[in-house]
Length: 438
Image 1 (spheres, rainbow, N blue to C red):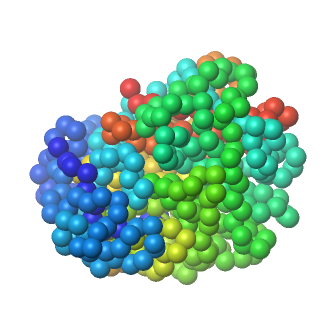
Image 2: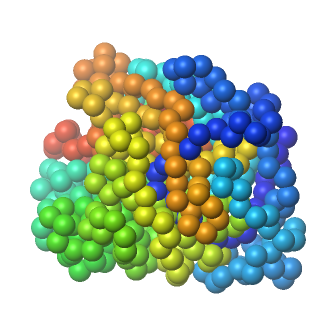
């Protein structure tokens, strides 16, 4: 059994990637995230890492600083020196569900992907920016939004939220909408339908409570695939016409109805005007890493910070540029990083092929502790349905747009998706689906 661990307070933003399993590492037990399923069978990964120490969200005088300050850490935590980064098992391991600086680790992420129901019965929905239940936000009904692109689930206090990024027409600022799911109980598990039925209205309690603009002065019009980590997020921004430098912004979500963005961290290598998706993870040595992906996720760039949190005051440094394996690494609209409970790192990519919606899972390994260049190995994929008889023949999600994994308090991985456009024009609602591993 792994105890909840902290290994520093740095945040790393990592581009999607995956690497091969380590044949020299002894096999893990049945609850390890190293046990992954694929179409070719199941392989076993490694046991939990050793040497990392546990600590609370706030660092005390024995090392580091208050993680809410954005200050740098000195490489120690309340448990003593942090272990060096293992590039094959680089993820911070946390078995708790309310850490403001990390996400819960997944026990068997590949097996959970393969166990997702193709066509679940429940449907979900929330009120759009057109609804009087929500604050004003871009929406297709009024011509102020083109489509939704990124999605993440957030839990703060006793409430659940989702965070959604959007692309917009000229003259409108892209940004993120924070949706409070007020009709749901305090849970880290599946959210369920909340009384929503196909074709029926969304609950007024499930509505947008804030819209945060990117503050780019009109240079960008596309908010890409985002990632939520604890109470923080990274959101990529770009100009669809490639007319401005692209990059990502950190978002502080600790007060969900008052989110705030940091400055744009611009790309410096590769396709510097492209930032379609970004993944964020905490590394086992306490740093935070971001992977920024370009158009169709065919290349990207690694950024890292040693700040105490990945928020707006963090200083990021660019590391390696990378390419993804072609054609296996698809044109993912979202690439999000998932920590396994053995320290393995995974990237979940979502995309649509024709009318088919897919989620693919890749094992990620890093080149070394300095460059952090990712390599990728696909370990699972699952074809899910966004439109079926269970949805009344209407699309309730679209993986060509916003989708996200979420790890429950039991360590199980589930998946959410929402619709690309406001197909329900005039209805003031946004459709959504939840896929829960069986």
